[in-house]
Length: 266
Ligand code: NAP
Ligand code: GCO
Image 1 (spheres, rainbow, N blue to C red):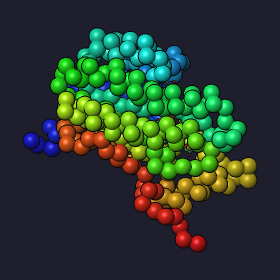
Image 2: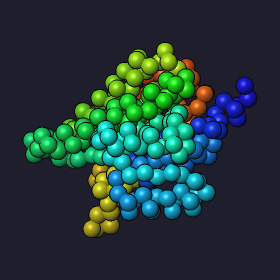
Image 3: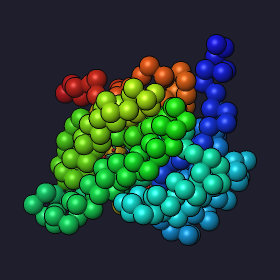
């Protein structure tokens, strides 16, 4: 098979959850560039309208829907609408997610549950909604957007780390349960990526200097920079394409080398 065909997503239907902006938007753009038809969801009409303009500006005829990934009925309805509009989903990217940066002793159990609900139960609910269609088609690709926090902890992100660690294991479990049915479920573990989610960690200080966390990340990353959503485009196309048909249950860290590095010596 030639390389173009191996990586082509021509005729495939991709659902990118939370694909209105940030990492999800860049991944959707990459999948569209490889030939896929794009569907995405988000929670507000304002974000949906803005995203449709942004997709159109890139020449991508994406279909956008309002659906909260934590709501089983809304997600079932989303999958049905996509099937009617574009065909059953071949590629699911579980990208929608939130973070709450609160020290554990100050965090309410309700806040912890909200993060786990969106970042872990959400991917379960979305996968459950599209796997039956994949079983009928005889193939499927599920890409779960994990995190450095699937491997590492840090102060203030207990719920996020618990959810993203769980998402790594959900990835392996979907692989275990549906690998035989020719469904590949893998994860991408982005490093620190410049998006709205991490904007508070990069705010310029009143004296004009870089945020201390920003400096910390630069020192922790062998690449010496923050990642960009574009850094995730190639890995996403690989994991969505036939090129990865024997890759299953794997987490591909795209982190500029953070996980390989002990940190700058004093
Ligand atoms: P972002 O800029 O905050 O975007 C998150 C997206 O998720 C938004 O489009 C948001 O849409 C959507 N979303 C949130 N909750 C949702 C829900 N309940 N139902 C449907 N959509 C929902 O975040 P990002 O930085 O692009 O991150 C995307 C994913 O990558 C997340 O899972 C994040 O944890 C992960 N990640 C990010 C980084 C990073 O450094 N940025 C690193 C590793 C992993 P609405 O708010 O409009 O609904
Ligand atoms: C944080 C960050 C991270 C990143 C990402 C790292 O507060 O530490 O927001 O959690 O967003 O998930 O891979």
